[in-house]
Length: 94
Image (tube, rainbow, N blue to C red; front, side):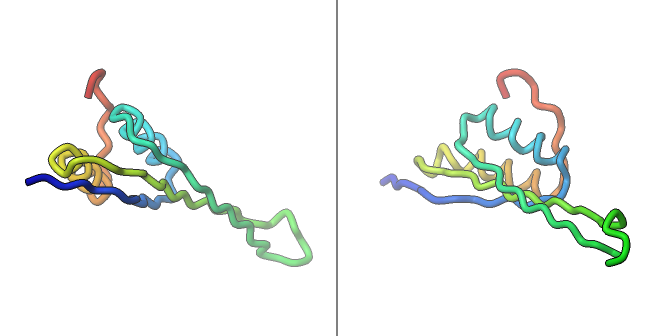
């Protein structure tokens, strides 16, 4: 018996280096994804607009579809890396 999985996985971060690591991981595995960016600017002093602070947040929407036995190892690796923050450099052919 076999099945088929289809859906989306979202990864959220505020770290641009982590975005680069995640996208490298996804590209190396041929997974489709889209990076969504939310940028906020807060002014600390209304009389001095230059005193603002900007923050960026990123959501990476990963499209997945396939057989569970194919997707499971990739999703397991992705979830473990996301929760541990461990993004070692990708070896060629990983």
